[in-house]
Image 1 (cartoon, rainbow, N blue to C red):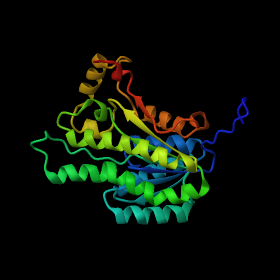
Image 2 (tube, rainbow, N blue to C red):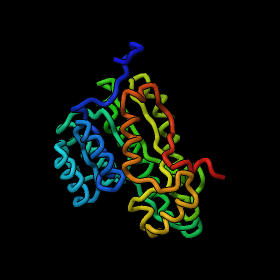
Image 3 (cartoon, helix red, strand yellow):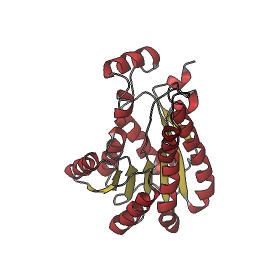
Length: 259
């Protein structure tokens, strides 16, 4: 109970958190941050090695975790993972839609398959995850969904029109889901990362170049790290954010302030 007497629901020890793309940099940081608060972690990941490693690292912290192999581009695999997760842990309190792909190319060079795959993972995947896990959350009348977008959704994305458009669509999906599920006491927000050291941007830009670019362009003078995003995700799932839904929160060192 807060001093003003208002009860604000937030993550509690023993709550279940589902992290899609849980084997990657952001996903692993999310899993470990929530595990340190006593959450049980369902690691959804396409790559068996990285997904199992995240679960292992959570358990090394003294937490509970299980890896579920799931390709977010496949509706049947999402349904199977949801059934298995509910059977193992019960209804989740928090779902983090983090799984993402970014085939790079200018608009005239992108294939239809690359465009459709980007939307199938980055947008349709989040839609299907919500449909698969939402009913159990609605039944409990408590929960949080955190969708991971990108600054490219706001600024455009040379050689990434597919990615930027998909992340803009994901944020709009956040707003609509927040409106529809507010009556069920389920909050939905978006994290909008800026330049961050994860495998996806590092595949196209060397780390030293990213550091130099951030030092020159980001007001706070550095790139973001997975732990930065994990801290924000944890806040969004906490009671301190209990009056916050349908919002996009940028974690980018102030880069959104620059022209």
